[in-house]
Length: 576
Image (cartoon, rainbow, N blue to C red; front, top):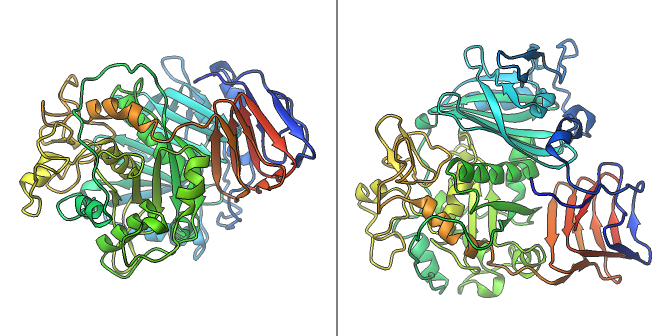
């Protein structure tokens, strides 16, 4: 965890403090003065710094889903393991009773019908367990692995990420907590368990077999990505050799902006689950960073969430699922004046004219409500083409969910932007795929990998076309031991990610002096602005952090002038 000097303002309190932050005129920040901490939290402070979800405001309105006599609590049963580690059970042992015909009960019924879901369990979370060095994943009666903490990244009050050590025997677990809402995943080989909130303090554990789900199409074969680039008169970037693994001269994360549509938010926050888009976006980012650790390239590659916001855009639905996705990607990637003849709008121009540059976003990903997996604009992007779309669920023609999204499609599409391709078997067995010499995936070592011998799996860039194995959170690597995760000169995405890390992390230059425009950061949104010298807001315009929003400024000097306002119930932090 990198040490930072931080000022923190949390729910019901706002920030005005030192760290070279100067308020000119009337800086309007609701709540009480908060003394700044001299440094970020240390590992030894972790246990007392993480607050349990029961002490935070609800992220959504109450559903009144829990029976009053169910005995639901957020506390687990602590015990000592044989090794002397303090271990908590992650899930409550209490029986949860859902009222019939409540929103939570309807969500459960819908999830049970998804192809590949073998069983579900309703539970509450013992958040205190995530302060321990080890915890018991009491998922089901016959699935109770004990896992050991690898990392914990504390971002603020009720806002942190917990990941376990990866082990072939015990598997891997990743948990993201944002504003007290948890998104989680446990995987061991083909056994995948997704944990999501479905009601007030109520979570569902989903036992999911990805191999039984319908195929999803990433749409990167002939006639999609490359032809889209031609359609909008954009020249695909030059292809660079993967290069060798190794430390870079400089290290910084690629900064990712995540936009979403109202349809996507409705599913995550109301219709399908009871989570938040901010929690889901951070979970996708955490999954990607965990993939770098699992592949032992995390010293060279990482990503960072810098903006989460809703766009007032109605998804295109006049064609097939692939055509709709392609149209949304086109409108996401290009501003109105850049669209090809026949385009109309405006659509999501703010991402080009304001948001991307104000928050130094190297990569932009749109989460949409869709019945397709995802699509990147190109293979090996530059700053004009580093755009992708993905889904937070997959639907069929009857608007029924047909796939549980575990978070790796996001990493897959961003992997394309770095320069990685699907596994070679997809083209070898697909007559529609006819690689040409100008195809970025022609004769390259940057493919994903499908392993068909024990242990069987597919890496992040391998799709389920001509590979029926479960996707794992790894990048292909022919040099991996004890067994290869790739084939030499064919599948080495780890090397590709390392070789492109510096380029992708500097697609948008960090400003020296950043003057933010008039803006309302809406409830549920997130924004992180950086500058090498200073950040300020003009005194003639309004910069408002609304209730339920979160904003971070990072610069040596931060000037909050008249017009800046952080509402009661918002979260504002500043780092030097």
